Length: 273
Image (cartoon, rainbow, N blue to C red; front, side, top):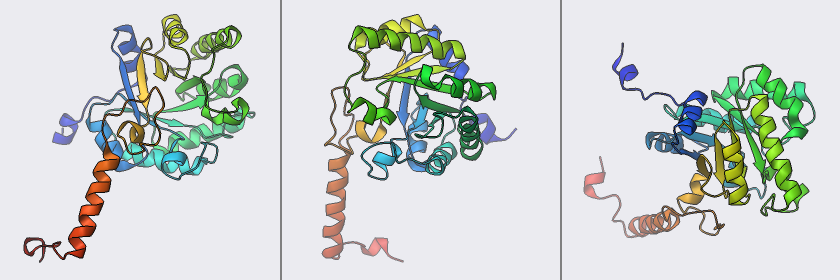
């Protein structure tokens, strides 16, 4: 056996996450969109890396997640998979790749898995996409469901506000959560829902519930890595905690580089051949 095999960390799987929930260990999840960031996030001991369709916002500057294509998602997920040894890699299925046609949903999910090397897919919605979920799951592809604020439905909701504040919508969300569990989804993301409701959902399910803007009563948390590292300081929702100020660090570094080049202090004699 090679040294690399011996030193390789134990891979997080869907079974690992279920065991973590059963034992009360919280799940840490972050996004990544490229090889370099994936290596850093994975080496930190992160449990799950989400290749979110938010890549089209963070990496391409689009206002919503709707422009993300399947080919673009495959590219980003492939880069992340190459940079990941330990974490479970989950890739978002883009808008339009699973709604309405279950056979097309299966075809697209198979492409995403085969061509990117990710270990699971994430899709937004509940009962309205039941057939697509069933079709994908029947092929042995793990699904992480996503309820609450579902960004691909931003035009339907009319914005990114908190979801399920009213009793009827809260009851529907709980019913959808129980449904996706019964279908066989291995985990659920809840986004921007009241903390009490999120805690109730987590307590009602045997599968892990990962929150973003859903309080502390769930089984884990997820954030966009660029946001929590302070690379986009103009974006500061209530649920976001800044763990660094990389925007300032990068800005200072770039200005110092420019000054050194202009002053001919870079490269120095020691930095030349």
